[in-house]
Structures are given as C-alpha cells and as structure tokens.
Amino acid sequence: MQASSVEISKVNKFYGPFHALKDVDLSIPPGKVTCLIGPSGSGKSTLLRCINFLEEYDSGEVRIDGKLMGYDAPGRKMSGKKLRQMRRGVGMVFQQFNLWPHMTALQNVAEGLIRVRGLPKSEAEARATDALRKVGLADKTGNHPARLSGGQQQRVAIARAIAMEPQLMLFDEPTSALDPELVGEVLNVMKTLASEGMTMVVVTHEMGFAAHVADQVAFMEKGELVAVDSPQGIFHAPKDERIWNFLRTYRERNAF
Amino acid sequence: MFSIPVFLESFQPLMWAAQYTLLISVLGILLGLVIGTLICAARLSGSRLLRGFGGLWVSFLRGVPLLVQLLVFYYALPVIGLDVAPTAAAVICVGVCASAYISEIWRGAIAALPRGQAEAARAIGMSPRDTWIRIILPQAFSMSLPALVNELILLVKASSLVSVVGILEITRASQAQAATTFRPLEVYIAAACIYLAINLCLAALGRYLEHRTAV
Ligand SMILES: Nc1ncnc2c1ncn2[C@@H]1O[C@H](COP(=O)(O)OP(=O)(O)O)[C@@H](O)[C@H]1O
Ligand SMILES: [Mg+2]
Image (cartoon, rainbow over all chains, first blue to last red; front, side, top):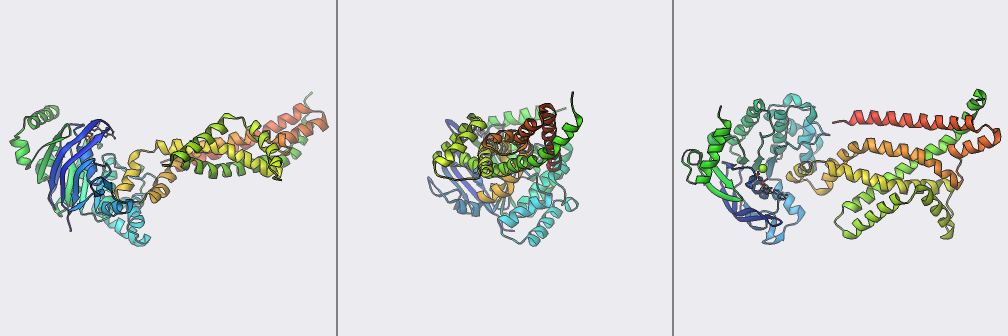
C-alpha cells in the first residue's frame, strides 16, 4: 500500500475573532498511526479537518506528500477540481458516521467509486462488496443504515473511505458516539488498517487505543499543539504539566 | 326538507367539474415544483441579486391573497396583449403562487439535513453537482413529501377561487346547479362531500408516502 506523509507547519485558523489553531506544527510520517488527544474544544477536529481542507486554514501550510493542500500559493485557493483530486487520496471517518440514510450499505460504499472514480456500476459494487467484507459486513450489504447498529454503521463508513483506496485516513472520534460494547469492533478494524501500513491520524478519547496502537501521540490544548511524543512518553513521562492534568482528569473520570 | 334525490343528482355535474379542480391543482403543483425549485436554488445561490429576487418573489406571493393574484393576472393578460385560455391562466397563477410555498418547503428540508451529509460527500471528492443530485435533494425530497402533499390539499381547496375567472370547477358548477334546482343546501353539501373525498384520498396518499420513504 502507498502511504502518504503529512507536514503541518505554522497553521493558524480563526473562527471570526476566535483563534482556534495557533501556529500548529506536526509531522505525520507515512504508514504510521498518529493519535490526537486533548480536552474538548482544544482544536483537534479543526486540525484534522484542515488536513483534507474541510476547514480552510488561514495561514501556514498543510502538505500531503509535499503537495500544498487547499492553496495554489499562500492566500490563493486552488480550484474545486484540484481540491477534489487531492481529497481522493484522503479518507475520513466522522464521529456521527454520516452515512447516507437513503442508500444501502453497498450503495453508500459504491457511490464514490461510481461518481468520483467513474467506475462502472458492476465493478463499483464488486469493490464495495470487498470493502464491506473487509470490515466484517459481507452479510449486511443490502441494509440501510437505520437497520444497522452504531458499530456496524461506523464500519460501513470505514469501508466507504477505504474503498476509495486512500493513502491517508483521518478519524474524528470514531468511537465516541458508540455504546461501549460496540467500541471494540470498530477499533479492531482500525488496528487491521494500521497493521497494513495505512497512514492514520486519529482524534480519540480511547487512551488504550492511543497507548497500544499509536506510533506517536500529539497533545493539544486551547488551539496549541503542546507536545508530540511516543505513547510511552506522553502517558508515562509527560513533559508538560497540561498533559499531566489532562491525564489525571481522565483517570479520575474513568476510575471505579 | 333535505331532499335526498336532489342531493344524489347533484353529484353527476359536480363530478364532471371535479376534473377541472383536479387538473388545475395537479398541474398547478407540478408547475409550482418546477418554479419553486428554481426559486429555492436562487435563494441558496451565491449571487446576492438572485437571493434578493428569490426573497422578493416569496414575500410578494405569500403576502397577496391568491384571489387578488388571480384577478390581477387575469385582467393583466389582455392588457399586455396575451390571449391565454382561462384554464391555462388559472394553472399558471396557481403554480406561481404554489412556487413560493414550495420553495420554502424545500429550503426548510435542505436546512434540516445534518451538515455531515454533504461533508461526507465532499470528503471523498464528490463534486458539488453530484452532492446535490445524489445526496441532498433525494433526502430533502422525501423529507418534504408530507408537506408537499399538504400543499396539494391546500391547492385543491384554493382552486375554488379560480371560479372567479370563469372556470367550471366544483364550486362554480355547484353555484350553477344551485341556481337551476333552487336547492342550494343539497348541492353545496354534495360539493363539500366531493372536496372531502378528494382530500381524504390525498391525505391517505401522503401517509403512505411518508411511511414508505421513512428512513
Ligand atoms: N464552525 C465553527 N465556528 C465557530 N467556532 C468553532 C467552529 N468549529 C469549532 N469552533 C470552536 O473552535 C474550538 C475548537 O473546536 P474543535 O476543533 O471542534 O475542538 P475539539 O475537536 O478538540 O473538541 C472550540 O472552541 C469550538 O467552539
Ligand atoms: Mg472534536
């Protein structure tokens, strides 16, 4: 599998007067898993969404395999066509799944192959079936999202993304909307992807996943990227007091 | 005394006239769908001029009673030298009026769609055009169906107003029938029954569609 790298440098993002990302630098190596953690509202989703330009960053650079994302040159936005071309290589999985409810699982996955990749319907459906088999849903291809559990819906959403054969996958709290007993099945699919060498950026509150699967963990607070380190470094020897405080709150909340 | 035979005999001419009621309502809503979709597109477009035009269109047509619109339209046509059949004039007028409401129904349905629906499409590189055609509009349409059927029911009732421009639909036919039989009560109750029957059927259709497209 080809895997992309991402270089984020000096990225700033404003929502009106609110400074949501402050000079963020982050290097995402190819074929590795990068987890983004931090308190709610710290800018994790915003940063993730700048990578595929669902949010437009105001200054700085996001480069995927060296190519500047979203702009032809600083301040000059690229054409819609070019942007779509770049987005094809980047899959995204959302907290709320965002499956299209009027389509079956198979149609959800095949849609992009037909409309974006221009594949004939029969081939698109064959590939969609493969993608669904890969996430363990070969028997649910005909179901509409409303007839699937949350965990199954999220796996369809992952299949929809991987069917496009991306070189980079973005996950925005993929398990946060799930009942606890359904979290595992989604994390397992993500672990398989990681073991195949996909570049993954994962915003998550699953510290266990971050500790065991991530190659590096980035901690954000108040729009700043405070630290990037190995999971070992972040969880067992945090160099910044803010990380320590965050982990302490997390442990207290999850203690029983 | 209420005369059952007169009541029953009224049905035949009124059923004939009901064709016009249905014709004008159905063609009116189809025309309203076309214009309403364009107006909605204008209101959601990037152009301030188009948005302003769409906004004016909606406020004007919702602010003026259909009866007045009909009369203005009917008397304005000869002035600008157009010779349009009364039925066509009525369909156009009803359709234009409906377009204002339909564009608002569309707009509400589109706004009610979660933002993530279009985002998921953008994220895989789908074009704005395909996103509209494949993702947004089909969902907006099924969400709007109950409101659209409701609008059709309103149009069936509002179509009684086109009698003022001389079309022999149910209301005008019952006036004529009442004048010849001198039994207005029986005739108008028959007319009420026909309107009710039509609209109960439409309401049932609406429930069926709502049930069928529920997601
Ligand atoms: N579209 C928006 N408009 C205004 N403020 C926003 C918008 N999206 C996010 N924000 C603000 O930016 C900050 C970071 O949000 P987000 O990236 O969603 O945080 P996280 O994912 O870490 O919880 C929050 O304070 C949020 O209120
Ligand atoms: Mg978030």
